[in-house]
Image (cartoon, rainbow, N blue to C red; front, side, top):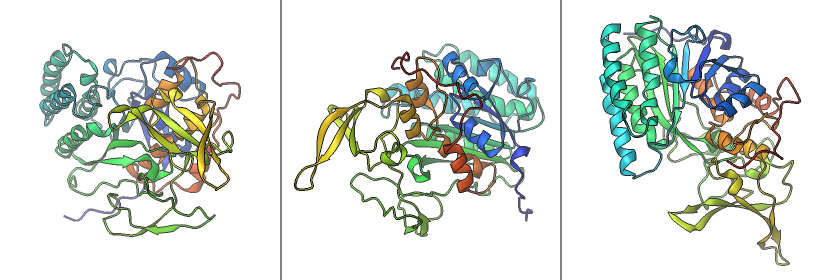
Length: 415
């Protein structure tokens, strides 16, 4: 069966409801694109940051207490979200594997319902089981699926696009969801994306599901963003940074486009590129986390490399000056001031003037999805084409409408 080619829709056509929205990593990207977005967020401190940034946030804090039919969010035709991942985030953890298996098993019970009454009965059974789980966050991963099914069966207007993201450990759940969604009328795929592939000065991996409503054409490919920058690998050489020069590169292990196809990419964005205004000298960052499971072996990155994954403990990372000796060899010098919240946000690709609020800013930053990665994901999911330099520059130079909306780092405490 031949289907007519999809005609791109303008950004103003889309309205996003963002579940577990955090400080706005996805919503600020949507705002830059001209897409309306409203977030659902539980944490009061994080809600304060969103408010200072001028982002819309639902009055109801709890995703479980809202549905696709609620007046605040009923007009949304795009569902996004990053449910809590702590239940699954430790690779090899027995409880983590059980949580993954539980979610997949329960998700199957929510699938393939054609009548609202049948789905509601299944949801009550699933909810009864998740309510008594030792970690309630396991059940929260099922909330996006509830919203999807209620949009179709109760609201009778399915979401046109769905984007879910989490740590790579959750990829089996997203792949299972993709199978369910294909039986529900969606073209759907899930893959792991590398944030530095898209110009984020940090090596952060995210499992991403993209689904587009396409009844009758569910098996078609789903567009994912094409890498624009060099993949970081320990010991690999950074590409030349000569102004205006692109590079032909075959990136082994990259999903898009097909393996073996050369494309033009830029060098990875290093910490020194993101922090040049505050860190003009070379430095080395020593991670708070041990390498290879050994707490004594702290991971190290120089300022010519992307940062390691920024977490809620980012302020515990130590920085040291890199100096040249008489022979030209770099050696570690005196310890420097630790990263400010603004700098940690920049390594997550937030704008420099993002108005972080309250006393848990490090945790807010560590939990967020990088806005620049979100910009690429949303552009592909909404079929708007790759984001141009104008959008990327607009994100980097964004400022809150109220210039006095900023975090007071002198009184903020480490998370």
